[in-house]
Amino acid sequence: MLLLFETPGGFAIFKVLDEGKLSNVEDLGNVFSSAESARKMVKLKAFDKFDNTSEALEAVAKLVEGTPSKGLRKFLKANCKGETLAVADSKLGNIIKEKLTIDCVHNNAVMELLRGVRSQLSELISGLGEQDLAPMSLGLSHSLARYKLKFSSDKVDTMIIQAIGLLDDLDKELNTYAMRVREWYGWHFPELAKIISDNILYAKSVKLMGNRINAAKLDFSEILADEVEAELKEASVISMGTEVSDLDLLHIRELCDQVLSLAEYRAQLYDYLKSRMNTIAPNLTALVGELVGARLISHGGSLLNLAKQPGSTVQILGAEKALFRALKTKHHTPKYGLIYHASVVGQAGPQRKGRMARSLAAKAALSIRCDALGDGEDNSMGVESRLKLEARLRSMEGKDLGRLGGSAKGKPEIEVYDKDKKMGSGGLITPAKTYNTAADSLLVQTPVSADENSVKEKKDKKKKKKKADAEEEEETKTEESSKKKKKKAKTEVEPEVEEPAKKEKKKKRKHEEEETEEPAKKKEKKEKKKKKSEV
Image (cartoon, rainbow, N blue to C red; front, side, top):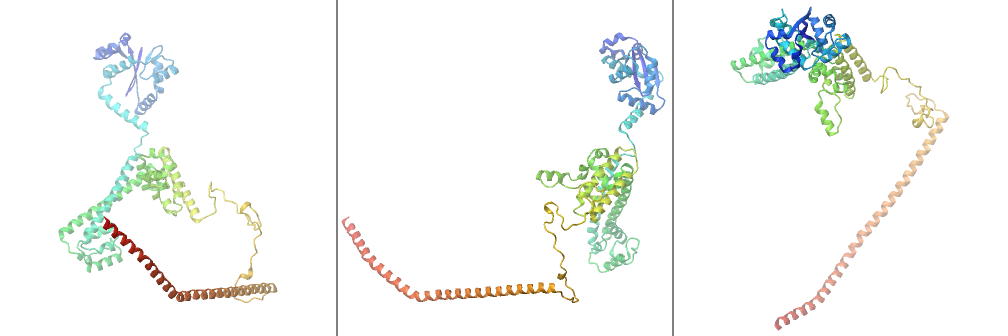
């Protein structure tokens, strides 16, 4: 029985001297406790050394996949005729049995035997010491890891993720420091904030000037334009700011140094990010730019993860909060996320931004897959896609003729207008009226024809009739209004005459009622007195 053993230096075949001990799997560990007992159990029969690292990497990669390499096949054919071979992988054993017709064994005893051989490997193989095995195994493991991950030192998107994160942090810090400089120095020279709007130029001017009294003597031509310099010097003479001590100006200048150093480092970091993006994702960079592409990769986690996303996900990447809010409240979902900051979307009008974002996301998804999984390192696909999108944007903004849906490859045929044509429900039922040239107003008097005179006479008659009808209606209205006024006057006079008679009648009724009520009351009083006296 033979044993196949893989080492970082090559393949080894051991002859099992005492096969009876394989029945006791638990005792095999004690057999390999010392080098002498191990030599009694197994003996090296043949060793096939790797010539270089690439050959070792190829052989180990094949073993990981469960298939023997060409060198291993030749080695087994030469040394394993008519023998049973013990292997560490059952899948490898089945392939060797099929292709080389060598019986293979894989069980717990074989695994324990391999473990014992590994513990005494330097003693069993002469010329292969532990000091040689350690660097060989380390180098081979690194090579295998690079092969499995298709590793390339140039294509490390982790650097892009860290760089874009640091760039955003630097922008925040720069903004905070610059606002602090403006606020601090504004107590001494408040007019300077309106004169210089750029933060970097402001910091440079403050660092050079110090106290505002020195502005008239200094030359700002290297920093500012001539007009701005003249305005600054005029404002420094009539400034309303307070006086500041030299110690305060020292700290303000140190803060200006911090702002300028951060700005300089930010420029260097941007150049680094630009070069890395052109190396790792050239097509994506050509399509959406360095910053937007880097933010997409950072948000996706890696370029490979981003390549697995469809175009619809790339379109709204960065707007997840708005998306889930819209789904929860059953409102419209967002049309774009980080891709909104791309120049192609920014050039589109407000009503066409969503359409351009959808088109750009589809092209960006293809570019990302080409960068992540393709072998080419040029940006031809990204440049071509950008040109197509810009042409489409021009056609949309210019309102060129094209189909609303589908492909815009073929131009639609323009049909000749027919005034009497009937096309379904929207067609013309009656022929269109001819254009009336008489309705045009002309400065030059033209001779009037007989037909036109007759038309004018008819119009004049109609106008006269309308006027007569209107006059009759007005007369009837005036008559009705006069009658109503007379009736109202009569009704107002009559109550004035009737009022004194009514008053007299009311007085008589009250007097009669009082007379009738008095005897009745007297009777009631008498009855009450009688009842009291009786009691």
